[in-house]
Length: 156
Image (cartoon, rainbow, N blue to C red; front, side, top):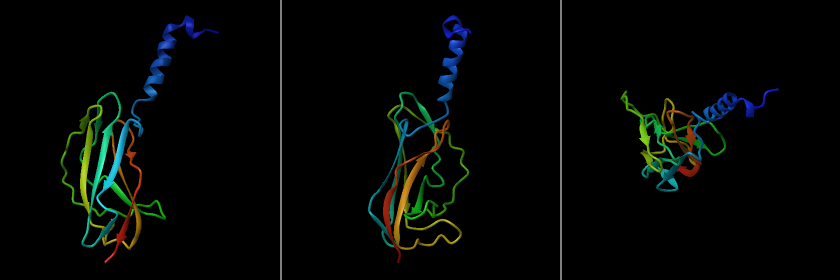
């Protein structure tokens, strides 16, 4: 049996493999995603301002998708996990380069949500409590989600 002590080339190979397994995966402790709203309820006459922010908490630059279209948040009824909003938006086919976030830098997206759901009808959602959560997508990694924020929808 050959030990790693006597085979430095194997030791280097194992270390390289261990380091490579961490590449391409972005966890919430590296990219912090937060969703904030400017109120507790949305009505037909009172939309909510939704801000989704992604903060690079690592010690190295990180490239993040900065297109922001469609909206980078979802609306889910409190009793299910199936998103029902926000409404669809017309997106331009712009080829935007990813944003490179330096350590500690923040990328923010702002939206006005009027309580409309997604789908063909895009009508005002029924009255009730809903959860909103945002996300950000690193170019090299998986989508990272914010915590949920509860809001009330008061249908007209």
